[in-house]
Image 1 (cartoon, helix red, strand yellow):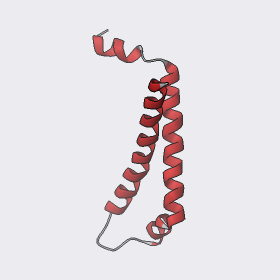
Image 2 (cartoon, one colour; image 1 turned 30 degrees about the horizontal axis):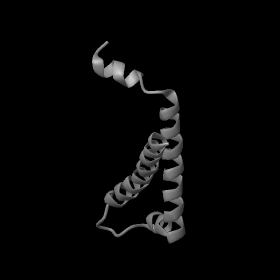
Image 3 (cartoon, helix red, strand yellow; image 1 turned 135 degrees about the vertical axis):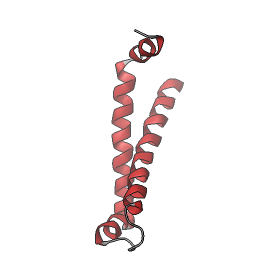
Image 4 (cartoon, helix red, strand yellow; image 1 turned 45 degrees about the horizontal axis):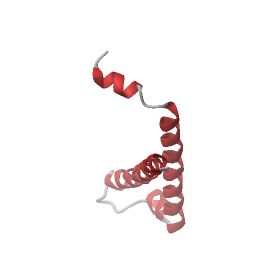
Amino acid sequence: MSAAQASWRSVPRTLVRSFRWWFAIGALLTLSVLMVQGGVRELLDGAAPGSGASAYLSFGTTIVGGGLLAGCLALVMNRLR
């Protein structure tokens, strides 16, 4: 086993579980904000003809970004505690 694998396996399961939980919560909250603002309706009704898959890609990265923000913030707050 290499040193990189050993260091990854030494991460406590509670940190991984906490990150996964807050990632999911952050992604859901981002999706709910987009739904309130009407972004989902615009995406489902049809984006501009020239946008193609970029509208879906932008939408997906926004949701994943919200999840990463919440997950990383939870890890930082846990570390400060």
